[in-house]
Image 1 (cartoon, rainbow, N blue to C red):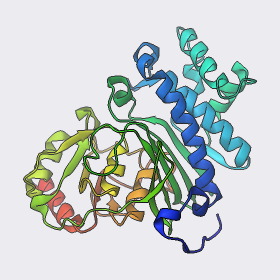
Image 2 (image 1 turned 180 degrees about the vertical axis):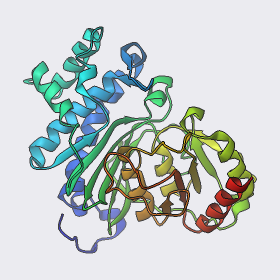
Image 3 (image 1 turned 90 degrees about the vertical axis):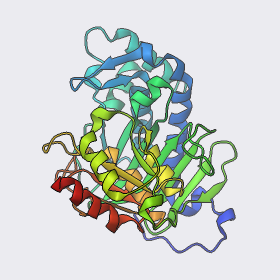
Image 4 (image 1 turned 135 degrees about the vertical axis):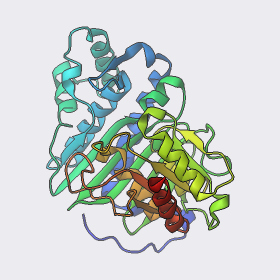
Amino acid sequence: MQDLPAFERSDDMVTSRDLGREAMLAMQAVSEALRVTRMVEHEAASGALTKDDDSPVTVADFSVQALIARRLGQDFPDDILVAEEDASALRAIGSAGVSARVVDLVRQVDGSSTPDDILEWIGRGGGSPGKRFWTLDPVDGTKGLLRGGQYVVALALIVDGVVRVGVLGCPHLLVGEGASRHGKGGIAVAVRGLGAWWSSLSDDSMQRLSVSDVDDPARARVLQSFETSHGDVGRLNRAINALGTRAPSIPMDSQAKHVVIASGNADVLLRFPSDAGVHEAIWDQAAGALLIEEAGGRVTDLLGRTLDFSAGRRLSYNRGLAVSNGLLHDALLTAIQCSDSE
């Protein structure tokens, strides 16, 4: 990826093209994928499978992974894709109906695609991280999709272990006042060194994202995962109490939480692993971490270490997640230490 020049335009004149070829094409791929997820939201529950780890996967997950793998193969044929889903689930006994629907959805975008093409595209997500690769969570927050909550399509480009481009397609998020509520949706994009931006699905305008200026822990607005099974709730609650915030924490699915913090509508996000051996998948953090950093915030693990995306498909050198607007990060890490000592 080439170094990009500083902007010579005002924020209200910036377009996706100004963010570079990788960001522009990634946004186009995610926008295309969002049209598919919106089409199947009402039927997602009836088209869901359960993976070996008991997490759900839907026709939207498979269709999005196929479509984005297809686009990346066209635009960046030499790049590796490291994605969440596995084509073997579609080949499993009892998933014929899901397979047929995935084929139908993908063909609405690419009418010439065959079932074998689609399985091949999904299978491309099994690549191994290398010097330059993309990482994808086709539907981050599948349970949010199933219950009608927040979910995102998360795509990021990693070069030499550093996230260079992050794109989060958010079909129901409202950025601005009341950003935790449902809205018309948009695409959040960050390019290292060029800031974080929000492009509304309604008008394609580009709005720069910036974290809040809250520096008093008592005023901190805390986000947490909607699903309590995603972490150690006891330690989370102890850390929130130690931080001293007066506001109740807000549950939300997916990396939509990262967008809310990047937009200044929340200040803190914590994730304690449920077990010491559990490490975050890179596709669950790459795009969101860059977005928050480029919006002026800070992202580390629970020990204050920078997230290391060079370790493989998981953040094996990190433990948990600590996210803030930057001004609150030292207080947040202190609160985490206090929760560990109790």
